[in-house]
Length: 194
Image (cartoon, rainbow, N blue to C red; front, side):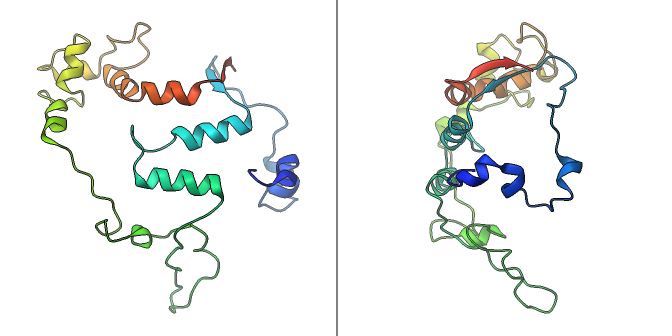
């Protein structure tokens, strides 16, 4: 665990939040089988921490929320506290809402947000770029780029772009959107079969 060397040295003894009598029931000494041969990019724990802080998030571009969470995680700080949940009698429920564990979006609201949510806006040029004539989830520019028919909504469910036929065309589009983020986050790791 970041900043907790004793816990990192003994995750089960000092890091588990269950009683010691439960640990033998949930701890496995062997890796779980994925059933079929799978591949994953492996990093050391330290490199994984850096990769997650550098590239994880809910979008192709870091927004203010992603940036804040990454910064606070790296620094071991927090900006907001929760709204202190109350029990049925209106009494604070102790220790459930503190140190960055927010309860609702209004706990993180500031004057530039609306009801706790940042305001996102697209330009007309950005909106034009995502025109989807057949409403299949794949924008026209991508369909043209990869030889799909912007007037055929059924091609999103087909697997014509992936040379191995594993992914639908819609999945290939979604993968394509984050290709640079994934490449950067996987850099320096080892591509391993398990």
